[in-house]
Length: 180
Image (cartoon, rainbow, N blue to C red; front, side, top):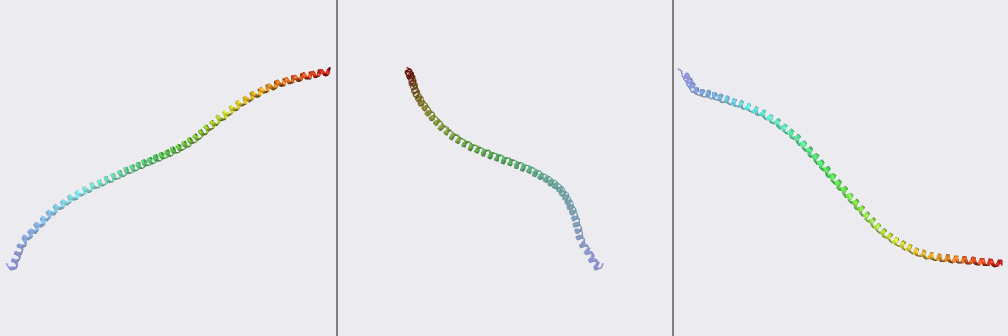
């Protein structure tokens, strides 16, 4: 065998174990790679399922958020309505209080006017009593004066009657003297 053949045989013998090792490494790598691919496929399926689940969760969350937003909007509207009712009640209470104050002030003014009128009436009553007393005194004076004047008139009448009677007698006597 020539030397080149020997070298080639030795090289083949030396490369063969390396080749076997490499082939076994590739086989091992393929085996491990296949296993990894299977694992990755399983992970992909799991992730796809997770994605579907997450999408469902996201849709549910969006629905929940929409429902909560609608509920919140309803609550806000109810609170605003309640606040408006409270404001209206407050305004009504202020208006009633103002009316009551104005009525109280008007009543107080009327009471003052009534007290003033009452005082005026009391004064007028006292003046009327005094005027009545003066008028009664004047009536009494007039009654006395009337009685006095009536007596005087009676005396004057009697005297006039006596004078007339005396004058008649005198005229009759004078007529009787003239005729005689």
